[in-house]
Length: 268
Image (tube, rainbow, N blue to C red; front, top):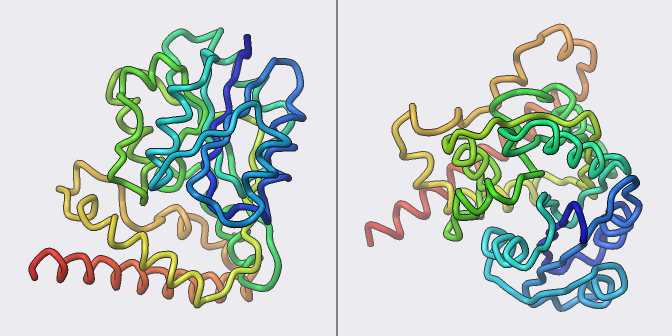
């Protein structure tokens, strides 16, 4: 029996999926299970998944529903949710398994995240990850005790923006503690452009509308306040900081545009 089950949702993830699954197969110290849940990919994703995963499921329409299908099929007592453009340190599964054994009240574990990619704005994104590491407004857990997942009822399937935060908060609200691994996960950003950043946040903005409209005490801050918590670190990389300000401004514009479109759609 595996000690850790990995659930990886995919949709046309051929560029990054093999590196992701290789990193899961390279986990040391514990037996792992790898489940890919694909949403009608039209590239080479299903073929890559078939080579590296223990099981390949087909489910949609979004990541939350895919993750739910994955954990319900999983066999291990620890379930981890990774995106298909992530690469996990080799000792993460073993570290997580030991942490859950040692603390019966532990419900979830955050994995520190760093970014890499091609081009100037990818370096700006990596700069952002370094600045915001450990901030309460930037991280959600990725490893969970299965009992905690079952008690929370899994991911809210209508959500595809901020679902990591929302699910972690529900697990914590059930009385479980949320810890943090030393092992890290890398996020392959590819080539980041302002146009793609705007379009992505515009898409997420439509789904984020309901969360943003909640009373302040029921949601996390919408801005990454941890980014401005250390002015000295911002000043050490002025070019990246200027680029990051531009990138975040474009993303905020995309998010607001998506939210405005959702608001108009509901009023029509």
